[in-house]
Image (tube, rainbow, N blue to C red; front, side, top):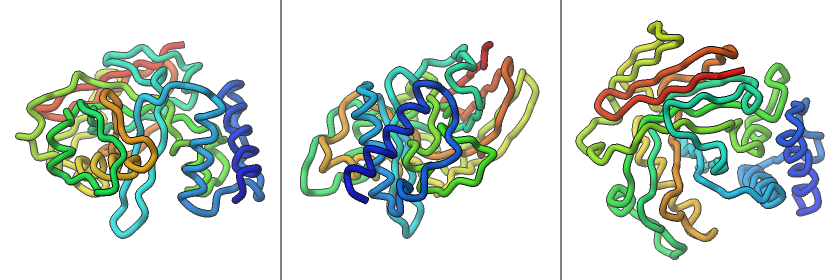
Length: 251
C-alpha cells in the first residue's frame, strides 16, 4: 500500500473520530493487507489528529507478528471515571492488566529483555473502553480493526501497584460487576497468560520508532472478554491484590 492510499484511509478514520459517525468499513482499495500496513494507517491517523500519544494496547499471539494500537492521552482516565457516552457510544468494556513505563526505553539495535522491562514498569488494573470507528454490526476484517487502533476508545486506570511482582498474573483472581451485581469471576484468563510479555514486545516494537517514553502506558489484553454495556451502567473490575478499576457511562 502506497503512502497516498495510507493517507486516504487515515483521513476516513480521522473524520469518523471527529464527527462520531461510524464507517461501514474501509473501501477495498484502502484496506490494509498486512499488519505493517495497519500500523502505517494508525500512524498516519495519529499524525493527522495531532494528539499526544499516552500509550498503547498491544498483542503478541504465539507464532504471529506482534501488533499494537495507539491510546491518546486525552482518552486515558483515572479510576473511578464518569465517562460521557458521547465519547464512547458503543460502551464496550474489557478488564485488563496494564503497565506504566517509569523510564525511557529509547531506540537501540539490541532487543530489550524481560528483566530490563520488568525493572522499569509498574502494573495496574484497568478497564479498556472499546469503541470502534466502524459500525460494529457490519463484518470487519481484523486488519481494518487494527488500522483503527484495535477499536480502542479509552482506558480507565487504577493506581499503579509497585508490589505487582509478587503476584501470579497468569492465575490472578478477576471479578467483574455491573451496577454492583456479580457478572464474571475467574482465575486468570489472559490471552497468552503473561501480560508482562506483551509489555516487553511493546518496548521492542517501538525501539526503532523513537522508543517508549517514561509515563506512557501499555494495556496488554483482556482477561474478561469484550462486553457491551448501556448508557448509565457502571462496570468495576478487580484483580485480587492488584487493584480495582471502575467506569460509569454517563449521559
